[in-house]
Image 1 (cartoon, helix red, strand yellow):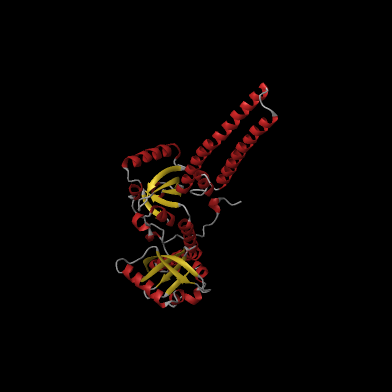
Image 2: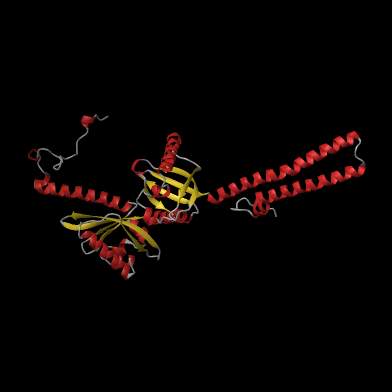
Length: 374
């Protein structure tokens, strides 16, 4: 068996990594500097292969451009997103007319880029909508960086396809904006989302509210009441970080008061923390509940009278019958009267049952009829 030291060495000293070139004699009489340049070229080629592999396997669209916009590199993701192969794209600048076929839109994009590049030699998170080869629209978020490659000035353009994200954002915004409850999203106390229901319920437009925290002073103009609910909210949040079905009375822009049931949730942490406040306008429900309580109180009074009369009359009849002072005719007459009283009680109970089924209305029709004695 060979020992390690017995294996003949076929490795030549490396002139690039050697610390002492004077001790190295190049083979075949080659000039040391020439050999060094050849080896450096091999190293550069290897690095270029690695870089090309990274560029082509990236999940984002990457294009390397010359100053005139001509494409010198077009990666696989760029092909997949746009539908145009590198063979069609590399070597010309015509791809931009294909991606932006609408001349006015293309000119608008060009002008915006020109404005950005007049102050700095790159742009970040620049959003445009491209038209793919198949006719589909895709939303791309662009970032660029100027580089020098072998004494040539070029621009690396990175395009992130955010179409799905933007569609999801639009869907979320649509759901929020068309919800029938007040939705406010706050960052560090400032309102960043104020939906249509919030505008309708409070009377304050999103233009008046977004970016500020003054709306809470407007909705709760009474300082003492505002301090009270703030204290209550603080106590609740200390215990469980959110609150549910917390009722307050707001004052709208036009003056009328509305009763709101609040629910909150917190998302994210630190700088990305957001508080989501959902406010359900329960004013109508509260009015219906108050009307129901009023009706039930009135109903109890209305039932109490007839029931007490029936009780007293039956008690008297029982006593007279025991004493033998009533003949069958008299007994029948008294009982007929109690039947009428019981009929009135039954009628009142039926009206109450109908009113219960209509309790979602501000003033149910059955309430009104009963209270008016109809």
